[in-house]
Length: 300
Image (tube, rainbow, N blue to C red; front, top):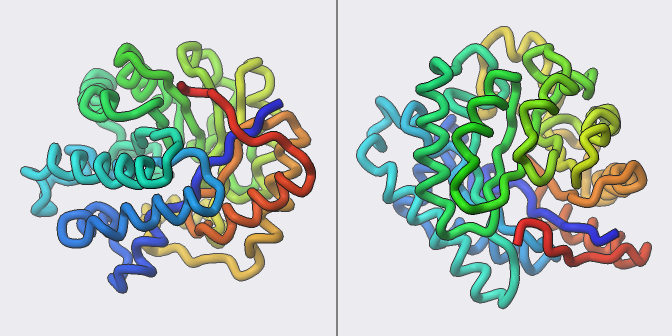
């Protein structure tokens, strides 16, 4: 079975390299004055062994930009993000571009979704804008059944394969952040070509993969390296800029987790927030050492 190696987290790398304090839209704002940082990070992930560049479009939603001063830069921001990934891919000479579509409102939250039809239209606008420059569309950090249904409806029909990634409870990977069963999301994802779990603790991924396997589709995981996202964190309606990195999840430890996911049948692995090029490089090294075949045509 061929293994597809994703990249790692873009946002935290941008924080480190830009020297800016984290805010809910730090990864968006930096593109307007230092777009070269985005391209450089994509390049570093490719050099580390990643086969996919995930575009820096995760948070570029009209509802997220409202009241931030970026409202009129919606299309410009997407263009800058796409160009950064495309230039890095072209310089590397190979690679797949995954167009990231993050959640509306805020990450991990199931209480900030607009009405269904409005949400579908917002997701569809983004998908239609980025699909021509991408090899696949990657719906990320889906926290509820409502988000899954709206995002899938908006992302399908644009001529590109759709992958969907769910953020699960750090203590119970069989449940979404909303508390709903991950298994109940599977019927909503019939058009998806791959199912993944993302932006959750690596310890939660085995349970999530156990659920996703029932769909019989390619599956995978890319965890974060944050301290645990607790129920209290979600109840306080905090955002990702309030989280801290774990000190016990360096590249070697993270790679060990990922190899376990492969043993469960995953064929797509990588990293999410607080995993950098060093994590991906170590994972690529481990894959090579174990003789696991890299290089897949999924999404092409």
